[in-house]
Image (cartoon, rainbow, N blue to C red; front, side, top):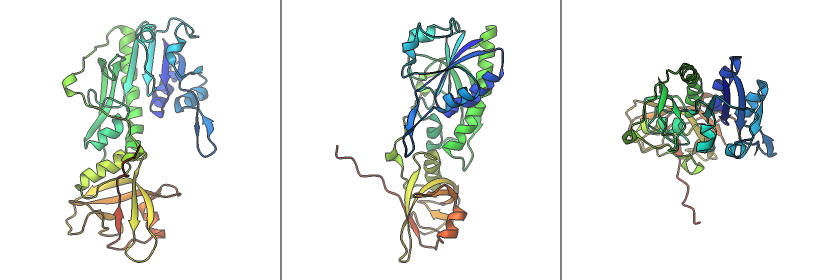
Length: 318
């Protein structure tokens, strides 16, 4: 099968590796152009481009895939596969492949249509997440469903960890879809528009948490925003020591009765919430690497009564 594989993000890499391993496929990868990153602003390829180059696949980097229509080095493609690409395809581009175009999406559609479905699965307090292979359609993430896979969300699982698991889970769903399309047995199930929900793009303005909420809600917010943008907090010491800025990255809700104000440490690892508490597992101090809370405590002993403060940024005056 001749496949045009349009992808940019790391979510696409497991599927790309699997398709490339099947030598019966001829694959052309189209991705976003290299972007500046890091302090030196060095141009860095997308994760999909990096993987494709390592696999020895041809790669085209372009701002608009639609501009390639009529100029593609792959003539008469059988199928277009879209995963974490970041560009909207024209109907003409979709129609250029004999079997059309399919998209691997990181949610159990029709829930969480949009840019950040995995994060919003956790932010919304869901206990299950999954992937759906759909037809590319004019309505964003609204195409007919061809395959689905579901998994439970771990009690302390972060969005980053769930992202990696769902990327692997999607491999089988995509293979099933391609196989069914090849033999003409694909079943297309329309989405129920009444059940559709949105998963808008995340922003740095979301990088805070309200400890007065119940522990499970606090846990979902911290884990859903990890690793980016992360929930920022300031550790306020009970004595005269300096405060410490942290990103809270991995926590777990704990059933713990207490009479302390929200944000106060009950012991070296547990922080009071509006009800119950969270256990902090992983943090990142400012200008430091990610570390386990046990390692952080070794250098910054926590005393009962120390507290965390996390505040929403002031509204912009613009």
